[in-house]
Length: 205
View 1 (spheres, rainbow, N blue to C red):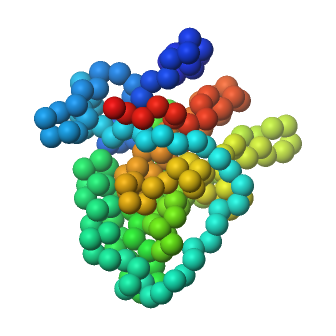
View 2: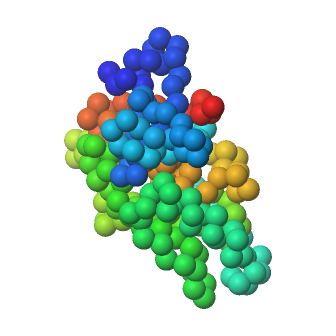
View 3: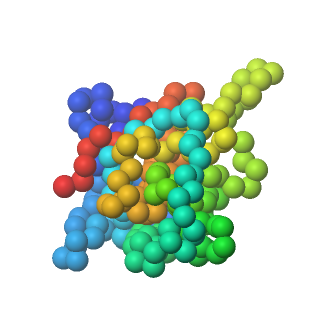
């Protein structure tokens, strides 16, 4: 039984944080004078915002104007700055022509590393999260393949309900932390065949 499951069993819901490398931590976190969170061992950590894992069909972008109109400098800068703070090892690719701003990097759960892409959407809806490198997310089940829970039909990670994404408040770093939380749950599911958590219901104070 994991720490989170044990706490949940006793009715305790604890905030979660993600290290710059992608590991989920629960304790030994303090808030600094600058309003950032720091772990005693891992340094700067990012709080995991309230979210619920889902699945189904991932919606398409709604194209409402040219890329130049959609990707305002201040909007993109907000995401870029958040990612530099929270996940500095990720590589940023700015929007060009018909491409969206995106980040590529590795999230290490402590039980496995995953190359991921975080891709903003023109319609400002929940960004896309893809695991790269041809990784099949699932487990063999007899002669069949059992896909992981909480995947979209196209194989992307469903890290939150679209209604939980607040484009004016959240950033690419929010989604990256959600992805790290998803991958931590996934690595445990591969070992136990039970998805350990359905998301985070507690906001960090």
